[in-house]
Image (cartoon, rainbow, N blue to C red; front, side, top):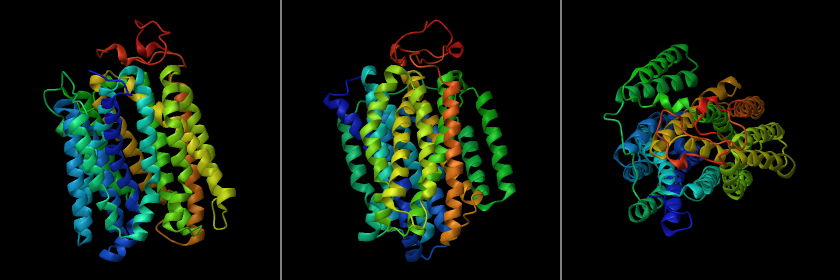
Length: 482
């Protein structure tokens, strides 16, 4: 049973899902600003600090698919709450860690909790909110979640400067407690009424193995791990195609919209991973900002996401996602080109503000329609696994981009101002190219505006699978639509 967005239950669903996903997103960003203090306090090497970040992202990206399937099978609210509790317990261990080894281990465990709660947040929203309000709800979820992601550098800088790096992890405790309380008391349970008989654990293991070796090979610049990771990924794809109960059902990709949205996600989120990793460092190392000032510099992205995402989600609900998913990356690419002006003598008003404003407009145009396209291309009972696949694609793209871009751009850990600034320019051009690729994919592969986006014919679809006006004959196969 679904509820309108404006009811008490509808508002509670928004609150719980936004807070839950925000906790995981915040931890993926604020820790970056605390790394120098962590190194000083725990005597960590550069490689140790890399694993503080990568250990979390690896388990998050690797296990999101399995977590989505667990939510569909065992109950999305139940797995969401389990993940939140798990994440909180690991956060406490991170805050108390006396050694870098224990901190890295706790971060790996923390990523498992984040993987459990991240896909569940959006799946809960999709399963609980009435179809007519779903576009607006997804826009609110995307906008408020984007606020958390963009506000991460600001909040992290403030916590590190006024307190300690440990405060970054203590922050998770009260937020997670609020998530659990609201979810248990007010959020309805939902699940797949016809789940698979068993979980695809071999497929999950192959996915983890592929990401571990690919990430290690890209960071270390070694060919052997990349070969092993590529072979593991090929084995993962083969296992999913041949398995009787695959972790990633191939039938999902019979939907042209689902396939196109995930290809756009792959390119665009790779760009986002590189931008949000390098921009704050550029502002501090090259321009000379403090951590708090660097976070404040990106505030326009936060404001624009909050103000515009719900509107773009609602527009895409009625007109289709093709236009915003094409225009958004183009605007974002223009913002990245403007970031080439951010150098040693950059002025905030003349150089930084225009770049982050244009980039924020691009994200505000893109994110909610992209999320809506993914969820509306499958029936509600498959929303958990669909959300898991899309989250896995996004996190994997960000993980591999952060691992590959610094080396490709000539940024090898040096803090030399000129070398870092030159590498930042090369990286922003590469990210702009990725955004342009996303725009081309959306323009070519997505149906034209005004078409109905439905789940593939091979999957039973409820009436609320459709978005926009019903201008096409629903008897036509989805793959045949323009």
